[in-house]
Length: 480
Image (cartoon, rainbow, N blue to C red; front, side, top):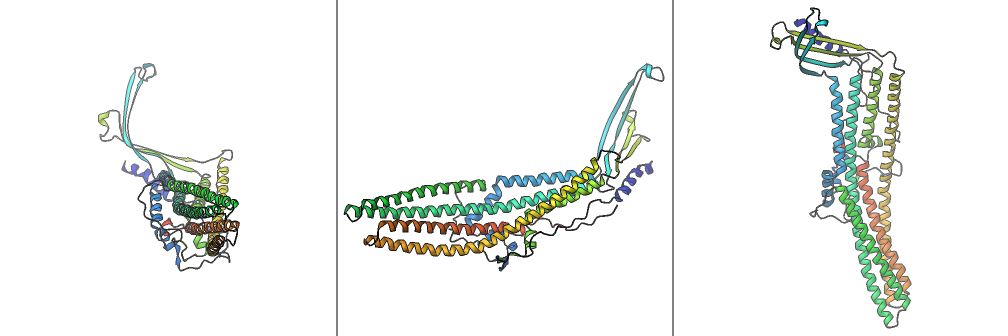
């Protein structure tokens, strides 16, 4: 009896150890982008951005507090985290198929046989009691079908984890941009209020000059129109400020009144003199690119499962325990009982279903390759655009600041000439409008430059805290 008990287990271990894999070796596709950044981009710098945590890259104390609050309270991020837990659970469910499922079982069977069906001619009642451990339909993964499905589930889980990292990185950038937009609205509103004050002074001056006959009624109406235009701008910019506050509050997911003091746009230091490595090093560490590659590896693993479906499936079912016709005799000597039911299933005719499943797996891998390459191309364009914007918007801001100073000097000179009666009020109006627009453009351009820097942190994959489990480029497989 002991020898018979060991036979099924020994056979199962022998067959399981002989398993192989039908999964193709995975090799990372060559990135379909240039090996160097465009000549118009200057990637030189003193420090790798991967060595800079986001708290160092975004030094504004208020911005740091807002980002930290968003990472804790943003509802979409909570969904992304829950998706990772969901994928992990699905992977664990699939992985469980690689191990025997053993359950304890206790049962009673009672039956009554009528007299006319009994061999003795008398009615008969029988009982059977069983207690034991059951092996529930365990598949010997001889061709690696279950292993391939498990690997696919694992890569799906890791892809979800990479997607969560990509969302977290994007959230940091979005909060920074929302905060910068709010600062732009606040500073533009302050500029509009200051403009309104100076135009009110000018309106009073023109009114006094009209009263003494120095200025005409037309000059007064023009001054009045300029003042009312500034009032309209104040209300419009105030509405933009409120909208920016509401959006920032939505992104953060919470609100409080004790935020640290922040810096003005002029005081922000997001430009950074950091180095940018070659495209293959930068792009392949981005979480979204890594997620696309995980999806590709999962599709590659599904091919192994589809190939294994052409070969026989070996499943084991059995029970080891004790049985007796009386409950009191379950554990008596000689009551040991066992069953062992191996089964081999070989597909013969399924109307092309198995071949179609393999064709589907191959097509889905081709789709995953194209999506992976497309993700890399989009990432390359995004980084190149932002690197270029970092340089060109900086030069644009410098020119815009020079224009602002020029327009302010022109306005001061024009107003002085008007007070002396040398020039008409129409020139004052033109100078006021141009000076206001130039100052607004400086605020807007500075925000654009800072936003490009915030987006560049995300485009370059952030710091190493956003890097997940290393991706193995080639995976060795056994031959069947």
